[in-house]
Image 1 (cartoon, rainbow, N blue to C red):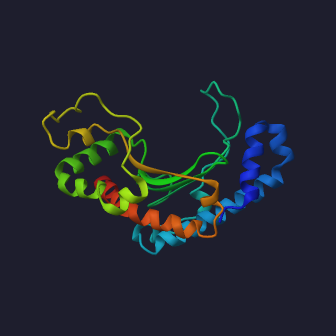
Image 2 (cartoon, rainbow, N blue to C red; image 1 turned 180 degrees about the vertical axis):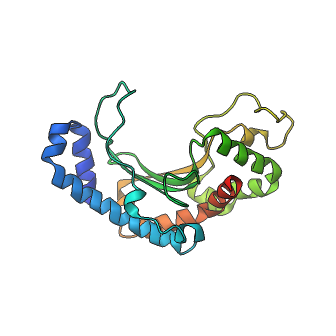
Image 3 (cartoon, one colour; image 1 turned 135 degrees about the vertical axis):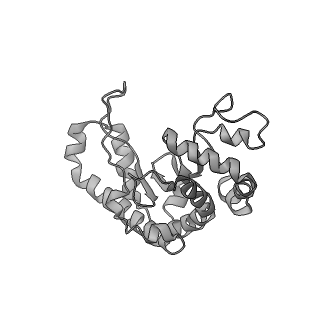
Length: 221
């Protein structure tokens, strides 16, 4: 489970987001990071029990967790550090183009989910094409009882106003084809995160996502 000290560190980092403070509290950071890595390892193990792609990828937890340093080169916000821990667990690792499962731990806005967030154009093209070809399957998938119970709906970060090239407005799948990403998100409270059953509960939600992840990754392949 996530430890209280991990959330405390992130809260303190949010209030003191500078290199001097971070350097002085490097040991606190390492303890918090180790806790998150341990949870990530448990998530990989749990996913491997029902997702053969994860099981076959031999994932290293350290390579599933995003670095805490922010890329500030093109940002007006020059805060040097992220104030959350984030892991992305997918087929062949986080640098691969495949969809997967994610968890973000933040002292105020933690969440988990899965799918694919901002795929590159060739990947997005393939997913749209598969939704078009297999729209009946897609419709059943996104309205399935388990997915709706845990996540409500499949979201997108952005959506086209008009149909993309090659599709017409009468296509029954057109509203989904306009999406620029396909993912779910479930917000988590502190009580859930700190619970002894956190990993087990997360596995139940992730299991409900497997059909979505499978559909996306089949499209990409």
